[in-house]
Length: 597
Image (cartoon, rainbow, N blue to C red; front, side):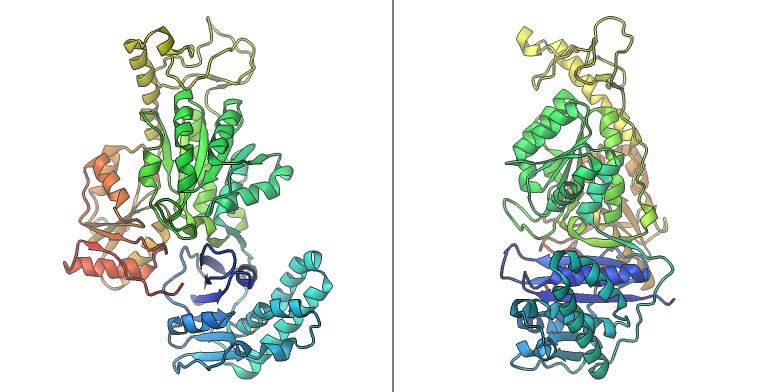
């Protein structure tokens, strides 16, 4: 099969079924064995406003929504007027002609009006009639992209029959067939075909896949306060809690969330929570408590634009310094940023093994693009039985020499951890600093020797942690002219930009960071030494990762590409930035994004 790379966008107002159309189209593609990446740009209004969902369909795995739009399904007049200029030449736009007073004007694309009222007149329920317009336009779109209606009809039956009843199913199938036939009679299809592959693909959302990764890791307690864009983790956990024997609690605020998670983890349960930057701010003090009490927890921060309420429904990589500085004082912690939606699934079990082994908090830096993005994947690619390492945990009576010391001074800094209730293993757990037995140092007097000993004991864990963290790797030639450096969610879009630049004769490599803290200065500098002219790419204003990397390793990049308008990078943004930096026009390139959302 020749390479297939096609982008369909759906525009409309919240409540018009944009997500439903997108999910149906994506499921059809997944059943064909085609890869999909879907990104939704939407506002924080419950009703009103505008939503624009972009679905990239490809014969090869894709990790971003691409650079172009081939076909738009405009569910209202505003979407038609707003996005008419953004269809690539040779593309098409489908719209409800009943909703248009003035015919659109563009002679380099195919205009595809659908007289919806004519095809829905037999639906007696007027409310149902209004809600089926998205299915009618999707039917027309399926003809344009070379698909039949069979899979859509199967999906409509499976999704709507139990929830909405036969009348709703029949109405949707009727208008879908009408839209499909209208397109056959009036429009020219693209020279593409949704050619069915041998193996259908699974289809899932980033937040849901992180939740699945937590279930695979053996998480048995999950708490959260709903905060976009992290709520999808809670939604999946709540929907599957009974079947998986997971205790799920929606709390009154993030302070309650983090303290419940710490309590569950103290009792020996793998426990996790997810939030965004504002919620994480409320968790900060308690994260320090977990560090002091040496209790392993995992906290997910699905980043959005800040500060304060900021951009509740937009993406950013702006919380790195917040995570690094969580709580006051020094204590061991692990920070990781998944590089893709599927990597989010894999990262959670990896991190739980580390925090259990080293008895410290672990924090995940995702963002809206990964968390709320959808992608396809091979069903067998998810490892539902990952290796589980609970570390030095005592769960039953063990032979001891002398009294059990919960915070025993050891060479590694890791002390054997007894689950509360194990006979013969009584210990005190407190947020004050303490001696080996858990007795508060300040109750005796602030003994400087005990303070130094216990602080050094905790911090020795960092030497062990860093040896377990894979260093970044160089992707591409060592003699590259340009090396792009990124972290977290930008991996896929940078990789695609690297390919574009290499195709243009600009020899480019890529170094990407997933495990952010702690960092092995010598190992990382050895990798960075192989870079060409270095350019750091990140989604924030101040270059948070560039400053962090320089502070930890002394490495100073030659140039920067940054984006902070709330929308994720497109591949051409990075490629264009490299070209600008190459000619010496600037040391900092900020792409100007034409408003298409």
